Amino acid sequence: MDYKTEKYTVIDVETTGGVGNGRMTEICIITIENMQITDVWSSLINPESYIPRNIVALTGITDDMVADAPRFCDIAAIIEQKTRDAIFVAHNVNFDFGFLKKEFGLIGASFSRKKLCTVRLSRKLIPGLPSYSLSKLCRSVGISLLGAHRAEADTRATSTLFLSLLEKDAVTDFNVISNFLNKTSREATLPPHINSDDFNKLPTTAGMYLFKDKKGKMLYVGKAKNIKKRVLSHIYAKAQKSKDMCAETHHLDFVETGNELCALLLEADYIQQFYPKYNRAQKRPIKTFQIISYTNRLGVEQIALGESRSSTNSVYTLYNKIAGIELLISLCKKYNLCPKYCALQTTNDPCSHYKITDCNGVCSGDEEPADYNKRVFEALDALQNTRDTFIIKQEGRTEEENAIILVNNGEYQGYGFIDKTETITDFNDFGNVITRYKNSYHTTKIINVFMKKEASERSIIRPVTEATIN
Image 1 (cartoon, rainbow, N blue to C red):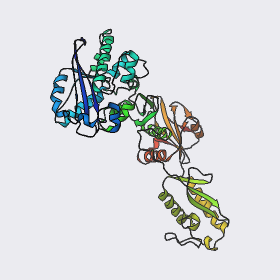
Image 2 (cartoon, one colour; image 1 turned 120 degrees about the vertical axis):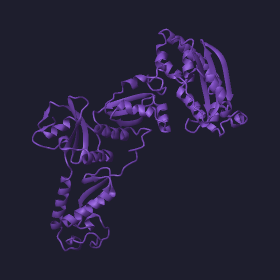
Image 3 (cartoon, rainbow, N blue to C red; image 1 turned 90 degrees about the horizontal axis):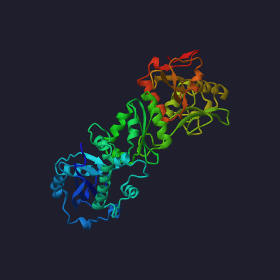
């Protein structure tokens, strides 16, 4: 097909804001036929809403300028007629096309056209430029752009750029443009700044995916059973958050994990480590509560629930204060401990807890601290023994390997991969296989949910003389 003879309409719109709640304030349509500009049409548009100050500063379009301008419904028929049977061209085409589709929708009409994006075309046909914003791109290739952020000026510059791109692509029989217009191609629908090579490298396996800005800073971290499919769901999402995120995204990256559990754990680590802009879950600080023990001035071994990130005399860590209090109450009942010396009441008088009535009297001098302390140490030992040590075995990244997640004394240590043919003769050697990651409230919750809902005897390995993962 000879794309030199095609009809194109190069379009730019100015607006009051984003597609979500913005309205159009200006439009310019330049028609190109047989590689020649055959028509230029532009109009201010009354957005029927207030134009924010920052937009006025950017475009120079004020409320007074559009007060007597036609509304979109008044010029919709002109726009439809001028773009009919033409390929819709714009710099960041999804923005301009999205606004027109929205405005037509508001008057009960549909709008559908073939699309070409000069950002994506430029990335393919003029690779290696420092920026593909319209002003910087025009400067790089020697195109004049005066009056940027006004519809006609931007459209004229885009038209000159597009004609240049057509000439470049003609050398290879329009391979790039035909690929972009191919309905089965993802090129035309990818956000303009996202590197198509990055997208094409995405696997269809389980793991974690990353959205990054032009400087490589993390914007979003997610986990998926099928990485490519999940990334596409963000790109095609109608939610404004996804649209904003994709508009900022320049690079895609991924880490294959072979299974969803490792992906969840890695996602939790990355969110805490990099605090990505568009991740909302798992970013709120979670308080850590610890069961601690110490000897008071009377020689009585006391237990308390403390709020702390770490403690040298910590016995047990929790992420919920109520659960910590309930645990102290259960220890008091089971081992006849004193609620006063388990931080369940703060008075200096002998204990009088409404739930616990079988204290042997250490708080009133009726029991010797040494006798009482024996039961305290017994309770603490039992508490320590509830902190399980085990390996969770999951599918690896290939058929030849398994993934292993190590939990030691109730705390997540990290995960790694090991060949299925390898036999571990000492359980402690699993620690040499994994990559270490930080234990947190979120990793603890992820593992606890897995253990309750999905764990099986075949997936759990506990310390034994010989531990095989086959």
